[in-house]
Amino acid sequence: MDLLDFEAEALYFDEPIRGEAHSCVEQAAESYGQAAAEGLLLRAYFLEPEHPIVLVALYRYFYYQHRLEDALLVAERVLKVFAGRLGLPENWRDLTELQLGGGVMVSMTLLRFYMLALKGAGYLELRLGRHESALMRLRKVAALDSNDRLGAQALIDVARGELNAEAVEARESKDG
Image 1: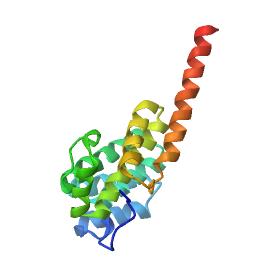
Image 2: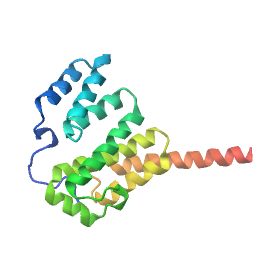
Image 3: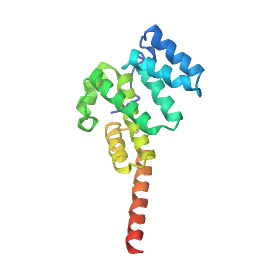
Image 4: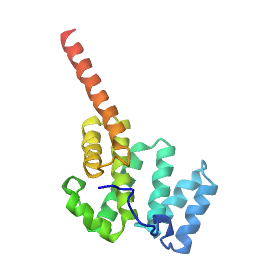
C-alpha cells in the first residue's frame, strides 16, 4: 500500500481539543526546559488522554529529553488508541494489509499517524538496544508500506547491522 497516496483530509492537529488541554500544551511549549513543562503536558494528558496533539507533544518532550523509555510508552499508547479508532487489531503484530485497507476507509492521515508511531517505536527500541524487537516492528511497517514511503527500510538495515555486530562480538568473546 502506498502510504502517501491520499486525498487532502484533516490532519491530527486539526482535531478539536478542549481549551484547558490546549492551553497546557501551549504553556509547556513556552516553558520547555523548565520543570513545569512536564507537569503541564501530564495535565493535558489527563484532560485529553487520547488526543493526538497531546500524545505528540508528550512523545516529543520525552524524546528530546532523551527519556526514550517514556517516549516508547507514549508511542505504545498511540498504537493502542489509534488501532481502536481505525478498527485495527489491538496488537500491531496481527495487522494485515486487508485491515490496513479498512483503516484507510476511516482516515488515511490517522493511519499514517499510526504507522509512523509503529516506526517510531521501532526506532526507539533500536536506540534502546532492543534490536530484535525493533526489527520486528520495522519489518511490519515495511511489509505494509509497499513503496517505503515511511523510510523503514533504512532503519531495518541499521538494525540488521547492529545484530550482525552483536553476533560477531559474541563469537569473538566465545572464541577468545
